[in-house]
Image 1 (spheres, rainbow, N blue to C red):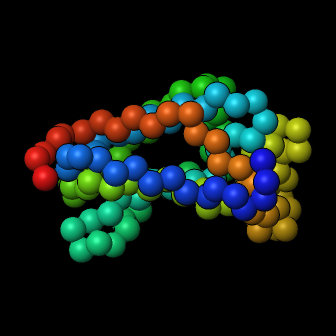
Image 2 (cartoon, rainbow, N blue to C red; image 1 turned 120 degrees about the vertical axis):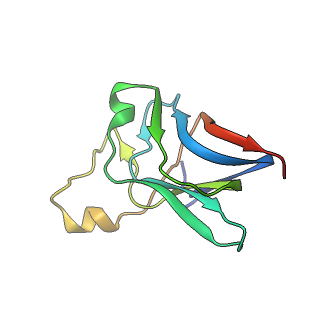
Length: 122
């Protein structure tokens, strides 16, 4: 991983979805997703935050995790953005260290993305 290389991933769908949940999978062994958010691009072309993950240790236990989304909006484009540190298993972040909060996301490894909800034609 090289510092500040890829901090976001955009997914463009051929259909419109009102999402109810999403699943991420991770298949690496060093830099776990730890701080990120999922956003959807609304009809006004503005990114709406659908779910924020702060110091989320789900990937220390599982390689595939599902989270609910609470929205009544429909989206065609989605974005995952690393918005803080990743979790380096060889150098774990210190949650009491304020400098650690400012450390950039070094790597944002995501192996898979699944979206669940109601599908609408564009």
